[in-house]
Length: 222
Image 1 (cartoon, rainbow, N blue to C red):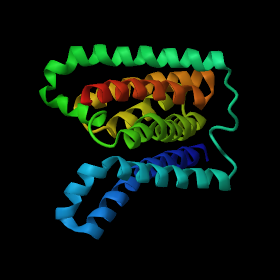
Image 2 (tube, rainbow, N blue to C red):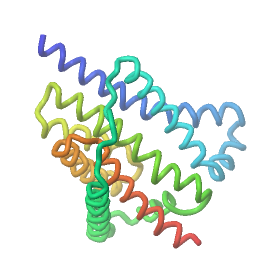
Image 3 (tube, one colour):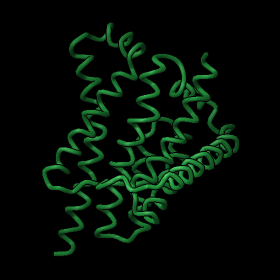
């Protein structure tokens, strides 16, 4: 019976990750099918953040809808004090600095990594801010530290739960170097979630990291 529960948990985790990927594919293929190949390239170039936002909203809406049906939300109430918000914002700054150090050490081994700057620079500053700083951290934390880690922790040990969600989180990033530090960040976020038992904490840390990256990229671009 316990083995069956573990299989169910792993199956649900796989479905969550597939839906996370599938919601993005749904938007991309939808635009491609409606407007055609030639128009798709220009649409994606000019409106990629809007497309990402649509995919994120669809993904999160379905997951929250399922959680609403079964009354199993990962965030039941916002009970953080202002001092805690400041504390985890500070942790986010430290995490970002750690990412800079990792990049400096590993960048020579990944010469093509400069393309990552496109993630935080370029077009649609308002939409890019919304996607990168606000929606993406909420979605990714809810899926990986919220659903995946909580599900895995219900049937496996905490280290296995943290490692699993971190590896999944890192694997879904595009570039090789990005995968490495995303796995490290995923582990740090997972530890914070396990220690605090509050998903809000990791959301704040994640938002802080992304905000600094977005701010620096926006400054460089302008």
